[in-house]
Image (cartoon, rainbow, N blue to C red; front, side, top):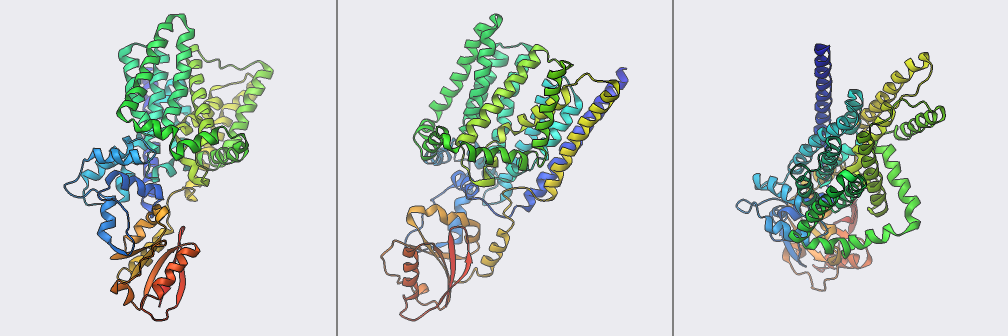
Length: 531
């Protein structure tokens, strides 16, 4: 029997290891396919490595190196965490993720590459898979098939792979949130709530997680809310409830003291006020539900989420009707399931009410609870058995395994169909076009009130030797001889009548007649060829 158990354990671990290795290969594959950057991804590099700042001046040139230097660590200027911190105070995010990205870039000075940010994500992606495995194992009584299905559905999920190729803090946040809830689940299982093994880890993880993204505070709020009352209700742990609350409070207090800008970001910044308004807006619930719940079926569990939820409801409805559900969780298991449910649904609701609703790009915001949602779904299907006739009983369990296997296959089909966001493969054509015109005269007419629009096309602009920037509100006459003497040029122009007037100023700068033809359209600008 012992040999048989050891053999089963070996096979179980070998299968899980093989699944994780395949998931890493899939993640690498999509990382390699990534060609372009979202504006926020450019900002990840810029705010982690800025030197002088990307602030164009009216009627002045900017060289390629001037632009590239703002996205990389210049040799001899690495590990400048003070500058990283200052940059985040100007924005609306805490600094921990940017510290990590800046460290990677400092170890590779003079380089701007997608792989610097993707390396960070890939590391936390693997750790997140392993952490979800540990969560599933600690709750599911060692149900090996449930563990395997949870890991397979999570690691192959288009939503999770999309998070990996998106060079922001969400994969790191997902891992830290999973680690945070894991130490609570372990404490419940072991009934060990002492200061050394519970309160101090809670304090440390509260401090770090709050520093990654403010949604981490939302996640920790629901974990702490449940945990506090769980400890308070039991007379044997009532005193522990207050020492636990102190550890959470001190963790948040330490974060706020170390990063005072956080309070202003949450309460008074443009994102903070937008989120508060959205949370209390009842009218946005239907539209937001359609988006965020819809993404569960489109990206998290591609094509199977609604079916799996229906099966769960049928299982439990049938079991309650027949009063023959065999699986009754032990007390600590029940407490762990409740903690996961409260956290997953609480976080999902707050984020669905407050996050930016930018179509499929919004898939990133719910990432910290995607793994928990998958686990709860798998657990609900695999753990519950309904007493029926022996013949039907022999069919039910294989049917559950088949159903979840089909769900895994649908995940793989979605990846085969490239159901992954943030690849921007179409941008390769733009870069090649710009590279073919790298020596041409390039002008960029920008809106001084929305300069960030310029850097949405940063990689394309880096293909040119230099660019002449012109403010659409500028009144200075264009006298630069390289512009007035050019017989042919390409002009990036923000949309609007004022910018078009400035385009006419450029065409008339040399006193000759020129023709302008629109040759390309980008997200925020049109490109005109002037002859």
